[in-house]
Image (cartoon, rainbow, N blue to C red; front, top):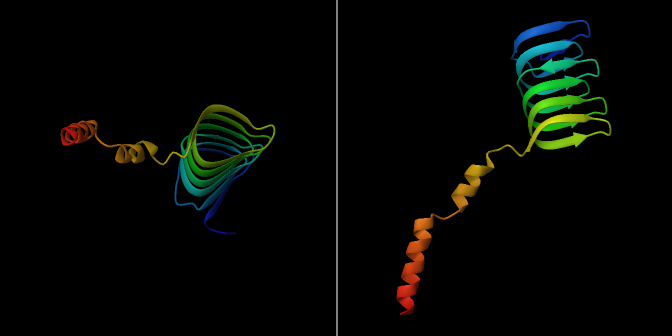
Amino acid sequence: MDKSKAVIGADAKFVGTISNVKSIEIEGIVEADLKAEKLSIGASGKFIGEVNCDLVVIGGSYDGMMRAGSIWATQTAQIAGEIHYQSLQMDRGAALNCRVVHNWEDPVVAVEEVEPDVEELTAEADDNAKAKE
Protein backbone atom coordinates (compact mmCIF):
# COMPACT_ATOMS: atom_id res chain seq x y z
CA MET A 1 0.00 0.00 0.00
CA ASP A 2 1.21 3.49 -0.83
CA LYS A 3 2.40 5.19 2.37
CA SER A 4 1.31 8.60 1.11
CA LYS A 5 -2.35 7.52 0.85
CA ALA A 6 -4.70 7.34 3.84
CA VAL A 7 -8.11 5.67 4.00
CA ILE A 8 -10.86 6.31 6.57
CA GLY A 9 -13.18 3.28 6.34
CA ALA A 10 -16.97 3.28 6.33
CA ASP A 11 -17.31 2.39 10.03
CA ALA A 12 -14.58 4.77 11.22
CA LYS A 13 -14.85 8.23 12.76
CA PHE A 14 -11.89 10.60 12.96
CA VAL A 15 -11.67 13.97 14.75
CA GLY A 16 -8.57 16.17 14.58
CA THR A 17 -6.04 17.48 12.04
CA ILE A 18 -4.82 15.54 9.02
CA SER A 19 -1.43 16.45 7.56
CA ASN A 20 1.54 14.85 5.78
CA VAL A 21 -0.69 12.87 3.44
CA LYS A 22 -0.62 13.06 -0.35
CA SER A 23 -4.02 11.49 -0.94
CA ILE A 24 -6.90 10.57 1.36
CA GLU A 25 -10.06 8.58 0.75
CA ILE A 26 -12.96 8.98 3.16
CA GLU A 27 -15.82 6.51 3.48
CA GLY A 28 -16.50 7.17 7.18
CA ILE A 29 -16.99 10.37 9.20
CA VAL A 30 -14.22 12.96 9.51
CA GLU A 31 -14.25 16.21 11.48
CA ALA A 32 -10.87 17.75 10.72
CA ASP A 33 -8.74 20.32 8.99
CA LEU A 34 -6.96 18.84 6.00
CA LYS A 35 -4.19 19.83 3.62
CA ALA A 36 -3.42 17.30 0.89
CA GLU A 37 -2.98 16.96 -2.86
CA LYS A 38 -6.12 14.85 -3.34
CA LEU A 39 -9.25 14.29 -1.25
CA SER A 40 -11.88 11.75 -2.20
CA ILE A 41 -15.11 11.60 -0.20
CA GLY A 42 -16.98 8.41 -1.07
CA ALA A 43 -20.76 8.08 -1.29
CA SER A 44 -20.93 6.94 2.35
CA GLY A 45 -18.36 9.50 3.52
CA LYS A 46 -18.96 12.67 5.51
CA PHE A 47 -16.35 15.43 5.96
CA ILE A 48 -16.75 18.46 8.22
CA GLY A 49 -13.97 21.03 8.39
CA GLU A 50 -11.48 23.09 6.43
CA VAL A 51 -9.93 21.63 3.28
CA ASN A 52 -7.03 22.87 1.16
CA CYS A 53 -6.36 20.51 -1.78
CA ASP A 54 -5.36 20.49 -5.42
CA LEU A 55 -8.11 17.99 -6.36
CA VAL A 56 -11.30 17.13 -4.49
CA VAL A 57 -13.79 14.46 -5.57
CA ILE A 58 -17.02 14.53 -3.58
CA GLY A 59 -19.49 11.66 -3.68
CA GLY A 60 -20.71 12.00 -0.10
CA SER A 61 -21.33 14.91 2.23
CA TYR A 62 -19.11 17.94 2.82
CA ASP A 63 -19.64 20.93 5.13
CA GLY A 64 -16.98 23.56 5.74
CA MET A 65 -14.53 25.91 4.01
CA MET A 66 -12.83 24.41 0.97
CA ARG A 67 -10.07 25.82 -1.22
CA ALA A 68 -9.30 23.58 -4.17
CA GLY A 69 -7.80 23.80 -7.63
CA SER A 70 -10.36 21.36 -9.06
CA ILE A 71 -13.59 20.07 -7.55
CA TRP A 72 -15.67 17.24 -8.98
CA ALA A 73 -19.10 16.85 -7.39
CA THR A 74 -20.55 13.47 -8.36
CA GLN A 75 -24.28 12.75 -8.59
CA THR A 76 -24.49 11.76 -4.90
CA ALA A 77 -22.56 14.82 -3.57
CA GLN A 78 -24.08 17.09 -0.93
CA ILE A 79 -22.02 20.23 -0.34
CA ALA A 80 -22.62 22.93 2.29
CA GLY A 81 -20.46 25.76 3.62
CA GLU A 82 -18.17 27.61 1.22
CA ILE A 83 -16.07 26.38 -1.70
CA HIS A 84 -13.35 28.30 -3.53
CA TYR A 85 -12.20 26.70 -6.76
CA GLN A 86 -10.51 27.22 -10.10
CA SER A 87 -12.27 24.36 -11.91
CA LEU A 88 -15.66 22.86 -10.97
CA GLN A 89 -17.39 19.85 -12.48
CA MET A 90 -20.87 18.81 -11.34
CA ASP A 91 -22.72 15.67 -12.26
CA ARG A 92 -26.51 15.75 -12.56
CA GLY A 93 -27.95 15.19 -9.09
CA ALA A 94 -25.13 16.88 -7.13
CA ALA A 95 -26.49 19.25 -4.47
CA LEU A 96 -24.66 22.52 -3.72
CA ASN A 97 -26.14 24.47 -0.83
CA CYS A 98 -23.14 26.68 -0.24
CA ARG A 99 -21.31 29.85 -1.16
CA VAL A 100 -19.39 29.22 -4.39
CA VAL A 101 -16.37 31.37 -5.33
CA HIS A 102 -14.62 30.90 -8.67
CA ASN A 103 -10.91 31.52 -9.21
CA TRP A 104 -10.09 32.48 -5.62
CA GLU A 105 -6.52 33.57 -6.47
CA ASP A 106 -6.96 37.11 -5.13
CA PRO A 107 -8.39 38.92 -8.21
CA VAL A 108 -8.80 42.18 -6.25
CA VAL A 109 -5.04 42.78 -6.12
CA ALA A 110 -4.71 42.36 -9.90
CA VAL A 111 -7.45 44.94 -10.51
CA GLU A 112 -5.86 47.46 -8.14
CA GLU A 113 -2.52 47.20 -9.96
CA VAL A 114 -4.13 47.90 -13.35
CA GLU A 115 -6.31 50.85 -12.28
CA PRO A 116 -4.43 54.20 -12.27
CA ASP A 117 -4.68 56.47 -9.26
CA VAL A 118 -7.51 59.06 -9.48
CA GLU A 119 -5.09 61.87 -8.54
CA GLU A 120 -2.79 60.87 -11.43
CA LEU A 121 -5.72 61.02 -13.88
CA THR A 122 -6.73 64.47 -12.60
CA ALA A 123 -3.15 65.75 -12.92
CA GLU A 124 -2.88 64.35 -16.47
CA ALA A 125 -6.20 65.96 -17.45
CA ASP A 126 -5.04 69.31 -16.05
CA ASP A 127 -1.73 69.03 -17.94
CA ASN A 128 -3.53 68.16 -21.18
CA ALA A 129 -5.96 71.08 -20.77
CA LYS A 130 -3.08 73.51 -20.19
CA ALA A 131 -1.21 72.19 -23.22
CA LYS A 132 -4.25 72.84 -25.45
CA GLU A 133 -4.52 76.48 -24.25
